[in-house]
Amino acid sequence: MKEITTIDEVLSALDQIIQESKEQSSPLGYFAALYKKVTQKVRDGIDDGFFDDGPRMERLDVIFANRYISAYKAYQKHEPVTLSWMQAFQLSKKNCPIVLQHLLIGMNAHINLDLGIAAAKVMEGKDIQNLKDDFDKINDILSSLVADVEQDLSEIWPTLKKILQCTVHIDNFLIDFSMQLARDGAWSFAKILSLTPEEHQVTLIRSRDQSVAKIGRLVSRPGLIVGIIFKIIRLGERGTVIDKIVDMEY
Image 1: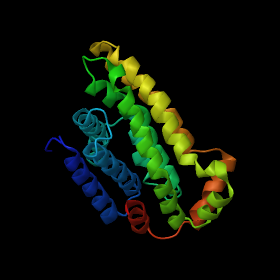
Image 2: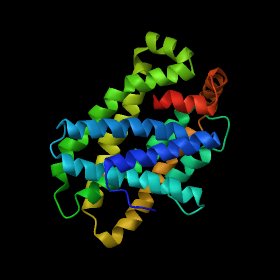
Image 3: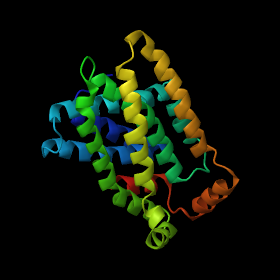
Image 4: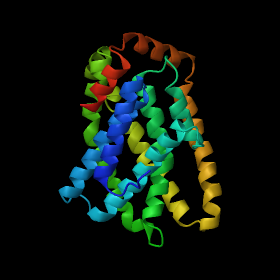
């Protein structure tokens, strides 16, 4: 597999995952489509001078994306992947989960585990605190996409639009989830990892992966009440898997 070194190559790889997901009618395409939007926004931010250090942000984006893309390809080949990504990939084999569950469990693995690793990697041998401003700007990008994602989900589950119009708190559910993970969990982990000797990092990452997987289980196996709500949503979701991927993509 050719090494991915630019954001454009990341986008091409994501297009390939989306296309494969459509061909296989796989829910894995939901997260890939969302991630493509985030990556496009990061690329636009770099081009527009939004970040303090554009070239460094592209390196971070590439390292970050490679963890997801490599995990996806490894899973397709039945090779080992982290527990967090295994949960996300295995969820795609089930018919019951709603689109939001697929998005959240993918975000959990990628943000709560991979982002901290990528941040520590790009600042290897340097003071990671110098990355903080640009790291926080990723949150601004995530925030800017919330309205688009909510609109996509409303197309899939029309009742959501009525809920969002009536309930202010639910209107921010994606912001609260993604921002909490990015700002608190991922950055704290990145700082710890950057201060950890290389020979101990594998153990630290494995421990972190186990903790993130516990969060993932809350998404894949919610309690009785939440489970019932998800089933009701699932019954109301419109379209095929391919239709839903397209809704998330555009």
